[in-house]
Amino acid sequence: MEIEMLIKKQRAYFEKGKTKDVSWRIAALKTLRKTILKYEDDINRALYQDLGKSSTETYMCETGMVLSELSFMIRHLKGYAKEKIVPTPLAQFHAKSFTSPEPYGVVLIMSPWNYPFMLSLEPLIGAIAAGNCAVVKPSAYAPATADVIEKIVKDCFSPHFVAVVKGGRAENTALLEQRFDFIFFTGSVKVGHLVMEKASRYLTQVCLELGGKSPCIVDKTANLKLAAKRIVFGKYLNLGQTCVAPDYLLVHEDVKEKLLEEIEKCIRRQFGVHPLENPDYGKIVNKKHFDRLQGLMKGEAIRIGGESREETLQIAPTVLTDVTPSSPVMQEEIFGPLLPVMTFREISEVISFVTRREKPLALYLFSESRKVQKQVLKYCSFGGGCINDTIIHLATSQMGFGGVGASGMGNYHGKDSFELFSHRRSIVKKYTWMDLPIRYQRYSSWKNVLLKIFLR
Image (tube, rainbow, N blue to C red):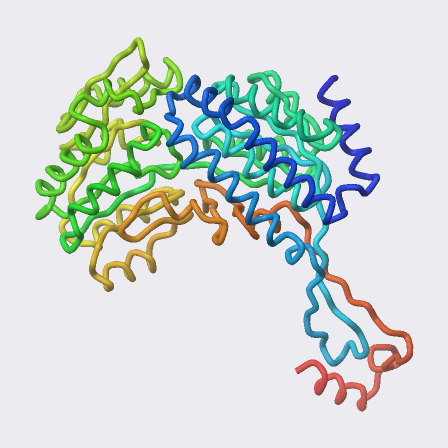
C-alpha cells in the first residue's frame, strides 16, 4: 500500500509539469552531482563493505563514471531537449514538421548488486534529464550501498520526484504490480523475463540490461603480451562480477601456451603472487554465489589459481583448461573470477560457435588482422565490444550501451539515455493561409497527375 501511494504521489507531482522545465532538470542534475561529492567517503565505505572494492576501483568503475555522465548530461541537455525541424513533403505545403521529446512520466529503475552505485545512478541521470519522476530500487545484496543511495536521494530530492525503495523479493514483487510508464531493469536473464512479463500487463515499455556468455577471441596475429594484460584486467575486475566481463576465451591453438604464460605473469603483476592477501582484491557478493562458483570449478583442469577462502568469500583469479562446450562452466554466465579456455584452428569455427548461441552482451577480439576483424564484426551479433581491449566500450557517454536478443534491449549512456527515457513526438504544424485541394474528394485525372508529381 505504501508503494502504491508513493507512485500516486509521484504521478500527481509529474502532472503539475514542473519536471518538464529543462532548466529545472539541469539544476536537479547539478544538485545530484554536488551531493555525490559530499558523500564520496560514504560511497567508498559502502562498496568496500558490500564487495570489498578499493577506493581506486570504486572511483574508476562507479563514482567517477556517474560524475562523468552527470557532467556530460548537464553540458548537452539543452540541445537534446530542443525540438528538431525535419523536411516537410511538398504534398503537405505549407507546413512545418518537427519532432519534440517528452518524458514518459513515472519510471522504475531496478539495479543489480555488482556495480550497485553506478547501475542505480546512471539510469537515474537519464530519467531526470528526460523530465521523469523515478522510483529507484537498489539490490538487497548490496545493503550498505543501498543505504547510501537512499541518503543521497533524500538529501537531493522530494520523494514525490525521486524515491528509493529498499528491500528484497517482496518489494520487487510489489513494485512490479504497479503501473509505471517505463521500466529500466539491470540483472539476470531469468528476472528479466519476469520484468517483461509483468510490464506487458500494462503494455509498459522496458529497457532490459541483461548479460550472457561474452566471448573473448585471440587469434595468432594478436599482440599476446598486451592481450593478456587487458584480458586479465577485464576478466578479474570486481572478481569477474561484471556483466560484460570476458566469460570464456577462444584462443588459436598455436598461441594458446604462450598466451596462458602471459596471463599467468599478468595475474601475478596485477594481483600479486598471493591474490587473496592483496588488500585491494575484492570478494564474492555472498555465500550463495561463492558456492555456485566452487561448483563450476569442480572437476575442471585448473591451470592457474583455484585457491579460495570461504571466510572472506574470495576466489583467486583462475584459468581453466581442457574445457569443452558441454562443460558445466560453459552452460551459464560465470559472473566470477573463472576463465575457461578453449582453442580453435580457423576463425570460421569461432564465428560458427558464437553465432549458434544466444547473442552475448559483449564480444572481444584480439587480432592484428583487418580481415579477421571485418569477418567477426560482419557475422557475429552482440551488444557491444572491443577490438584489442576489453570492457572499455561502456566507459563513455559518447556511445550507447546495451544488449541484443537474449542479452537485453534498449541502449543508454549520454544522448541514448535521454532518448531512452523520452517519447519523441512527430508533429506537423499546418499553416492556414493556403489549403491545397488535391487530397479532397471529388478526385479527378488532374489531381492524379499532381499527386504523382508531389509524392515521388
